[in-house]
Image (cartoon, rainbow, N blue to C red; front, top):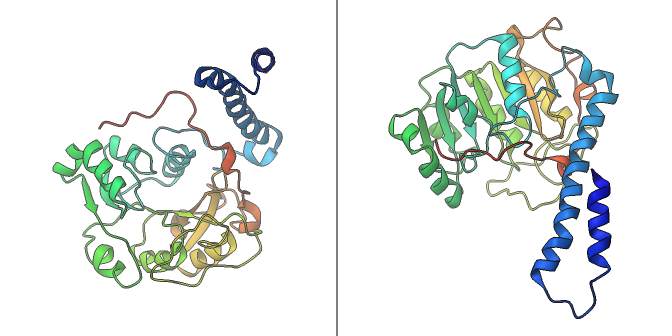
Length: 291
């Protein structure tokens, strides 16, 4: 597969010279390289899964397949976890819902769930109002157009929720761990929490809370997996795994969690996944944006 791309690159490069100023030639040159990068990223993840016995364990959730609207393989992981623990309300809350095309609850919405999306980005809100307008009109999605913080989380979400959620996702980059402590009182069956995989699994670290805290593109954001493990334990949740790309951690309520269902021990050291952000790819066909 790669040999034809390499041959094409070499063939094109033979005809390039400093005076070449052709967009079409440039595109012809770089597209094969991009195709190779995509293939290498997919092979990298496949090899990790194939060569590590931990991912072959039936109790592991890290390598669960399924990607429809999620960025990573959260669709598959969420589905597999609920297959094991069941659902009750089929209600969700997603803090940081993005553009409504790519998030962790869009597939739930498509399959009969309903709930709350909270998003603060103007472009993202405009996209949501377009792509899931039918769900908004039918009240299957309650859209909250505000940035959540420690001062307004009670009013915006906790006091406004009149249902028992099965699932809550928190992906707000900087203050994630602090908001999680507040939302833990809602007691969903499953939490999906973004973690900072740059920190070693045994390091207990979280950024100090800042009202205007924003991710600046560096390693300083959120909380380490060990910090989230400790928060989860404090509020009655067990860490059952992370996605293989090192982005999200999954916490199941203790009364629904045991080592018959999930891979123990439920620690950061056991379930840590390093940052593999460069391997994140949408496999197969493109997402379908319209509801």
